[in-house]
Image 1 (cartoon, helix red, strand yellow):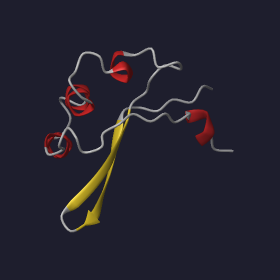
Image 2 (cartoon, rainbow, N blue to C red):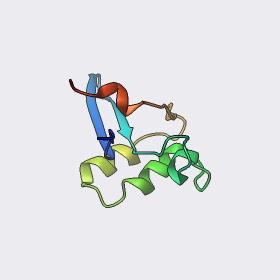
Image 3 (cartoon, helix red, strand yellow):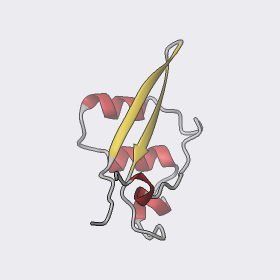
Image 4 (cartoon, rainbow, N blue to C red):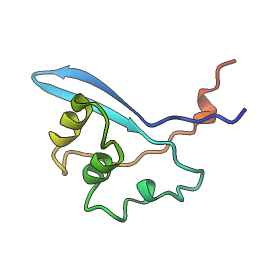
Length: 85
């Protein structure tokens, strides 16, 4: 069975009114995906707002409060490395 990661957001309170979150997207190997390429948006924040549109208000509020320059950047995780044995 091939590993897959459904889109999700994981968030935590880091104190002093600050929060951090990680947005996970299922992207084909090689990154051939419009969300991974992020060419249709001005920044990653705008892409995430588009990708997670329709999600619950708490998720959208967290994304809307993010400053575009706040360090949103792509990272690659290999879901095969998370296989349970």
